[in-house]
Image (cartoon, rainbow, N blue to C red; front, top):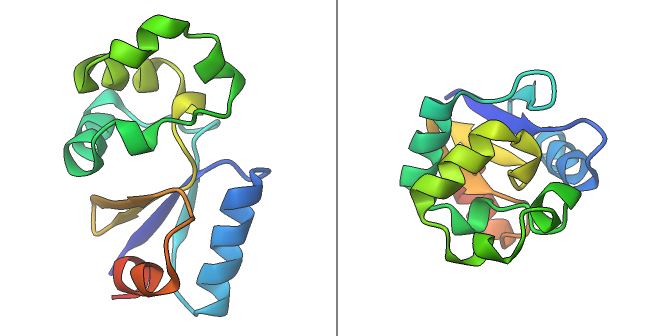
Length: 118
């Protein structure tokens, strides 16, 4: 199983997720989305798997600067926005065997076990 964690190193939620992975002895590869922004095709796959809504980083400056029209955007418009500014993506995003399985780190322990360890 290949687990990739997409995020930024100084993100508190990413740090919590990485601590959990280490504690649970889950091997992973960390991808810094600031240094290596995901390609549009990859974002399209993530949105197909998870939909755009849970992938939105609604607490960031980038999101707030979009204006109210963001509330009516389609998944395709979000894909375009995410591909232009990786800071719009909620962190961390977990990809297992090339498929997006979870975004953020607020899931119940049993969901984390299933999605990230299984």
